[in-house]
Image 1 (tube, helix red, strand yellow):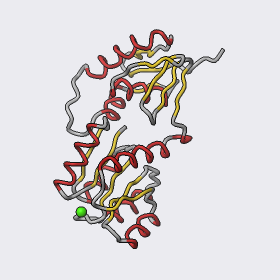
Image 2 (cartoon, helix red, strand yellow):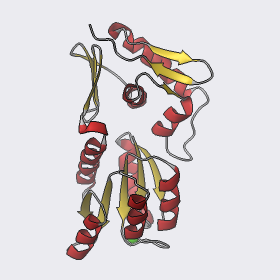
Image 3 (spheres, helix red, strand yellow):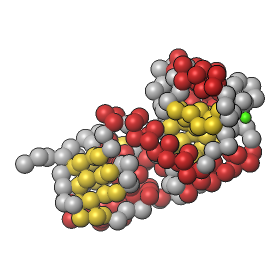
Image 4 (cartoon, protein in one colour):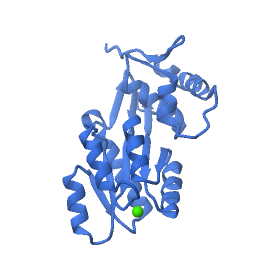
Length: 224
Ligand code: CA
């Protein structure tokens, strides 16, 4: 899952980036409204954490432009304490939730998880593929009810493949969902990850096919 943090205060931004990276999100950061606007127009995010007071464009304007482009990406606004007007304005413009500063990092993480859950197609937190089940909210995978141990990146790859079952997903698309901008992605990182994932999926008879030159494909589940 990929997040954009829009926060101009360097210390607050660092705290958010560190906390969310250690919760296994791919994290990008914009320190101005203008930069955020460019990134949001160019890249899909699963959720945005948006400060209001920003240089160049304020958070309201960033949100207004996003929604005008038709983006449904969930937005958590960061507002000043007791600023009721800010909260009302943010929600009117299409923010999904808000948190007042100073916030608690564990609370912020919980709000982000809830937003992503609500933002996902159909709102269902569980994905099924034959005997394989993925609980995207709890980050747990099972085969016929037995726990399947996956690393955060293996889970991420499997989640994308399951969401797009029956369609080819390129390595670039996978890397984009799993890594932040500027993060080094080794040439073989995705291949190694898929290789490990295949081994772990053997008991479920779920096959991740390599489509040469294009990427990977998870066949649509067949139901008996
Ligand atoms: Ca600010």
